[in-house]
Length: 468
Image 1 (cartoon, rainbow, N blue to C red):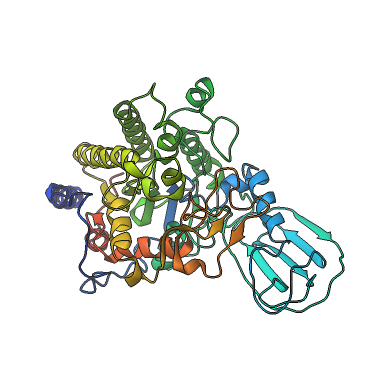
Image 2: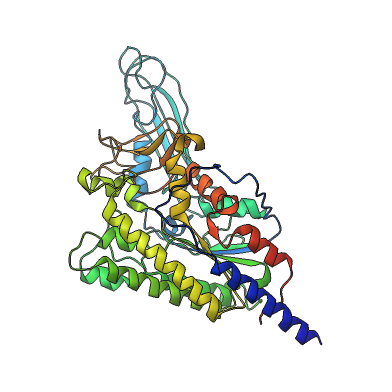
């Protein structure tokens, strides 16, 4: 009798999920101009899931790339910038080279970097005072103090704090999601001393859908990573190892576990889309096939509730805007060619998720429409509290975008804006914490997932049986 009841519940769940997937998603090119957040929807995620496993690239990685040393050169330069006076200007006095500086990267509660210096010449509006920065993550790391002295006179004051994982100034979507669930932020997999009671983050910045050997063979290396990238297959291997070793054989309750798959393919498009040898259609199909295999891999490990992010309109980022001409802009002011490829990717991804839903009716697949959420913010960015939709907060150069390919955020001469919360873009390649927060809210309560989080919570609360 119990088995027949469980079978009936599973059947009803499958019917419900398929019905939700049968409802078409809105087109990517339609801007949303109504309510900023859907105030009629109050989704309470607290207690819905007690464990989260995350995968993805730099928009989801909260420390793995840094812990592996992949960001060592990039972040080292970023910290060196903090010793200068270009990061924050206030008070009275000129620029100074004196003072002292200390920097720490990582640590269990995050690292910090600070710099202070005097003023070298008298005058108004110069740089002086103190600067305080911290870079927090869930991983360990090393610290490096430095000190120096200089001559000068003048005065100034000012304090600025920057927190983040080196690829943003604060929390990512996955961090905001965990907060909404009422659980601690899940630590990066490579922080082996962390508490993994509530899950782990396997995302790795720079990851690609295609294997690293493909990029190495075709000499398609990136700005910050000079070696072949690791593919998402690596993250699946990490997860399998985690289940076997970290959990020491203890079975995870998949009924209360959420799997979050961040964008897969962003790094592929960034590296390949301007290479004439490879068509965007070919790349899209390859990326979708790899996503499908990845999802099947975690389903084979028992995943039941899976959220899959679509790709954001990367053509709206300074990186791609600087690499395209003004004649290649779309109606939103973004680089049209790569955004067309991303739109095609997202359309095929939704189709694939619909197919997977039919193949695995015991699972619930949620499509998180990053494109739709991003365009909703872009179309009315002032209402979301932003004043700079395209300009990077941290960067170099005198361009409208505060971005220079040869002078990336963190290198000498770059600057950090006074208020990152007013910027959608952090460094010309990644988003600010404020933007991640806005996107998360639109995912949870703004109708930018399909099915919605409200529908997901209702399914979970019905206590459907464990398919195992």
